[in-house]
Image (tube, rainbow, N blue to C red):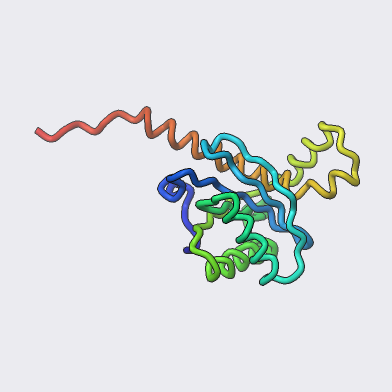
Length: 168
């Protein structure tokens, strides 16, 4: 399917679908999945990266099991707003996945998501070793929760907009 905007997501998530979030690392893929009401992001175990075709097969099986209707991928934009090599890798990952799946993808600015996820794990008193195994899925949950909050905001603003005047 390819890349869609966040505004196009609601139409893709009907019928009990969930929304998945990914944080792409060099060694792991962090995964989180929403509930069916799109309120909360729930971390899932990381996928250890080996080779793209193997990673994609594992990921697609997980997305099918979780009944995902769309996937949010963290886009690592530099602090100055530019896109570097990591953002290019994320875009390439989406292009390659789009050839293997009909699922739509949304790119989401993930600046500081790993930092926020690590702070949360520290506050939860996880040891450095335990944090290392959970950081990518925690970052995926942080990314996904940002999208879920934005969807809630879009839904709320759509309900409060006045109806257009009727033609006479």
